[in-house]
Amino acid sequence: MQVVEQESAYWLAWAQIPGVGPVLLKRIWQFFGSLSQAWQAPLGELAQVDGVGPKLLDMICQQQQTTNIAENYQTHCAKNPYFWTPADPLYPRLLGEIPDPPPFLYYSGDINPGENQGQITAVAIVGTREPSDYAKRWTRKLARTLGEHGFLVVSGLAAGIDTEAHRGCLEGGGRTMAVLGTGIDLIYPPQNRHLYGEICRNGVIVSEYVAGTPADRPNFPRRNRIIAGLCRATLIMEAPSKSGSLITARIAAEYGRDVYVLPGSLDNPRAMGCLGLVNRGAQIILGAGHLLELLGQTPTMDPPPRQERPPLPAELNCLLEAIARLSLNTNQPAVAFDLIVQETHLSAAAVSSGLLQLELMGLVSSEPGMRYQSLC
Image (cartoon, rainbow, N blue to C red; front, side, top):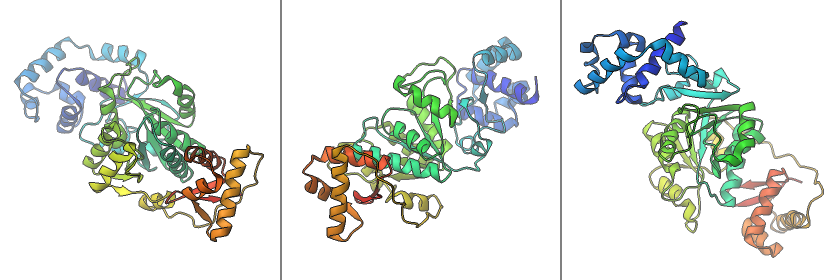
């Protein structure tokens, strides 16, 4: 075996010892400098590693006596050929800095070494699986902006906010990474099969779980630490008081990474988790330009280009015309959402849905404070 493969084989052997988790495995690696050297070390030296007690030493000794390193590795690689360990040069640098990096990160897709080595900033976008139209719209907008400006958008391929984040980034011509709570060969939820394929062509799918691992509730909180660990900043778009996204936010803060929040309404139960994060010091996002500033990139101040209006359904035409009239009457380029509802006599849900369609078509832009400007 080559040197890198040989070291990976020892990572596999150590990771299979009961009682040796990611935290302890990192300690052993740092103590000895390599896990192949640790495997050959006297038990007395292993006992010097914090967390290695007599019972674990017995377990390590048994494993060493029964494991054929080369055969064990070949069997593993037959079903899991593509992976990194923390000792590999392409293991994501930021992920390797956390206290409990996954010993194996399996991957599929189009690898960009610059992303793994930290040359491209990764930003996580997560939230509820049942978002409001407001959260969907802003998730698409912010993810698209990040994609357009060269950021890597990281999320979990789940329904709701995760899906909007991946799609928004791809619409902006960017690259995105999906972190799964299953093996990389399983798509969960199944309705994201097409999106999975798009990500493989324009990004990367990763998981710490071996091929064939099904969706299981405990896997997803552990998956969330990888999302937080991969990224410089985590955006929580919408989350109720009990949400897995809040786990991601807490872990990101513990790792010393930035946590940003999309402001929501006190009337919206799905926003209460986000408001709680704000109360604990998370930074509020005030728009796409503000997000870029928070990430250290100065947004361009050029006005958005005017678009030619394509043939539209009557309801969408009605919305565009209402925005134009209100903008003229108020002498303001951006018009408040509630004024559009009053002007069109449509329901708030119909107006919200229509504005989202127009925004995705590039015919309107949304501004802070739920205000909308015509681009055509």
